[in-house]
Image 1 (cartoon, rainbow, N blue to C red):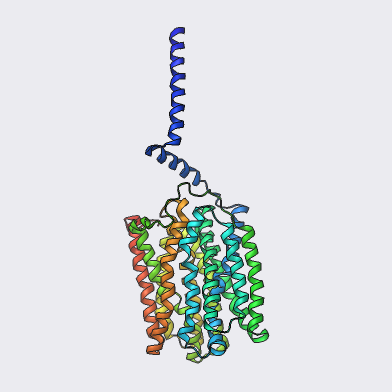
Image 2 (image 1 turned 45 degrees about the vertical axis):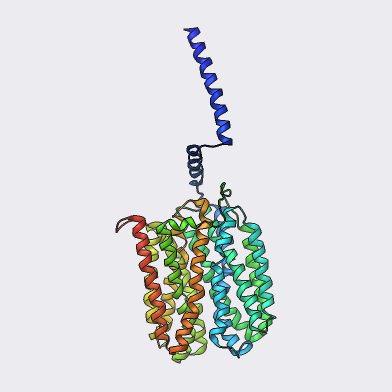
Length: 444
């Protein structure tokens, strides 16, 4: 018995040594099944989300501050459009001036392809710091602009590109910290644009009247710097970079039919989403309401969008993002059809409140379904590519609406176009939801 045990022990030891040698070789030249096993182990580690705690909510605070200074400031474009038409660029047509704002909106999303990929590669703080510096510099430089191409370069490209870098990295880093409460966290982050879209138009309008355009931009630059300092101090990633990066641009993700249809839904939706917000104040003036009250319609809509963002985000965590996104977007489409027919103060304020809430739902949780469509280690790439596709809608939508208004002189026709695109987006979302669930009812 002792001899047999000794032989068995020796054989086991030899087998163990041999196994260790094979393991070492496989680490150098891994077989396909070993790589899959390692991937599964990594996925198990990724599943351990904090879903709260001081550090996680500090990241949300930082990203909210960053979105306030970037997307929130871009949402104040209507103030600049009116000022340029009346003063700086009064010899140019409104549709030409609108290209400055369109570039800003588009570049909030368009750089997502590059910055999302950089995020997956592990670059976070450096791109955010460079973007923050660029944003502040271009804000100060905009104060010195006198010609159209100056504004295109500084305000269109400069501020838009810097805002896009911050927005993409913020959308990628929050899912590192949250899973069950991801909708609420993204809604809080998106709430920054509501806050900025509420305070910046008021700040800009009042400062331009009292301090002049140049000092308005300089003071605004310092305000934005305060928000961006919070962003740079608080933002942090939790997970390591993706180990096998692959190509910088991976078009293979569009082989996923659900992902492709959802990206198309975002593109079509953004063709009309900002039309109501762009022309709400102008339509109020045309309808004969007090110009000061008409100006505040935009701030009312942006303030109420905070309710939609927070409520939509919290609801998405309970019943599923698509189940909240679809009815919210449908409501925005219906209100876009109704907006041109609002001719009184009460009706315009009602449209501003309800459209702010419904469009806030769309903006708050539009990224959440993308996060669920693949690995968390590739969230930057998938989100970035979707935002790039979506940006084409943001770029083309306002000029199309402007051209319709110029040729027909009717806000009703603008509303028909924008409302139709938003409702078309809803239909595509329904298709994407069905592909995910395969049934009528369920959490998606």
